[in-house]
Length: 487
Image 1 (cartoon, helix red, strand yellow):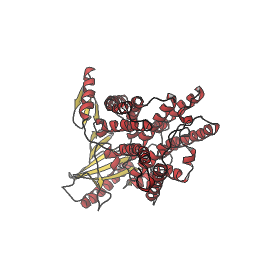
Image 2 (cartoon, helix red, strand yellow):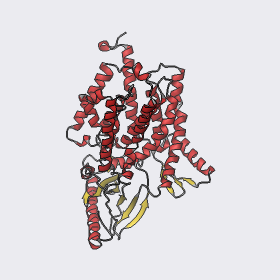
Image 3 (cartoon, helix red, strand yellow):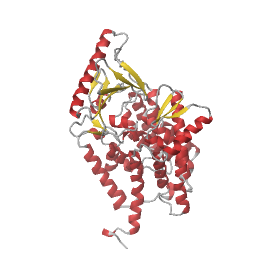
Image 4 (cartoon, one colour):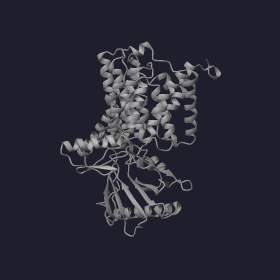
């Protein structure tokens, strides 16, 4: 029996099997859950284990207190995202397997695996913050902790295969690094297009049967590019760099017109260019039609399934997988330009989690609060939406005032202190930090109850407050050039 236009029932099943993993991973990257049933499992387990080892821990609702540490308990901590990720990986790994008891057992095993893996991720987070106190992890490293624990538990979902474990582990490590890097970018402007471009690129990645001399040369060029990115501090290039890893990236796809455009669209700054969104979505539509609907994805060839790696090739795979850590460690290995912004001495300050302060200046209106966030190492600040989502708060821009955001009960407005300037938007901040080794500066967030004033009035007042703050900092620098320095 045929469906419309000659598409058979079997071919429709093939189309769905090709598209479902893409849809699941794309949905996973963008999902955000404040609380769920997993929160009732993971949180008591974490606090209970800490109690066994006589570590003081207190459940404070949106955070848990562990000794001197305050650990935010946001949606991804609760565990549902971890469950969705493991289920998506399980479905992806079993996409060519026939339905049966073993098939569903591997997928359902991800439910208890998600609870255990999430608890281990939280303990890794606690250990990191205790070791590097008072510093905190970056959003990329935060996601990477979770995906690090995903790898051993995802192995449970792997069907039996004649492929060597080395190749399959390399694939998992590659996916973990890519998702850890792009997950914080999914709520940025153009984030949905970036998400789809990344996931489609991953769907075209496949381990080759042998590592040829040509691929070795390509890997040397790839490693040289990593050195340039690390030294110059151009962190936005790490994502496409990971995706085009020569060991796993198909060169025919990469050097095709749609493959090249999709790869370019994985760069977080591409979406900011005029017309980029049209190009991205038109190419995504073409690729989905051409590769997943018009011609169904072919199962892996026997050569790919039965590849056996020599000890030299295994050493190469291990070495390359170690380089996947560079995007997360480069700012430590290659520290960039230093820039010091000091809160005015006349201000009252209160330290808050995530390397921040609540700042109150003399004569400041009580209706608007100011949050001051110092950078984490040399990592650039994210957009206000991404920054607050990482803390469990969802905001949207106000229609009549696009610089103002709201969560339906508050107004938010962001500014940046960077390169000796007050920068009023993330777009301008992005271009200001494009240069090699540029310092990330300070993220300023103004917030007010939306019942106290209109969005327009809040925007005007916040801009004046930001200008006053900047002038006070510059005045103190001129008065005390030895103690307060912008560079």
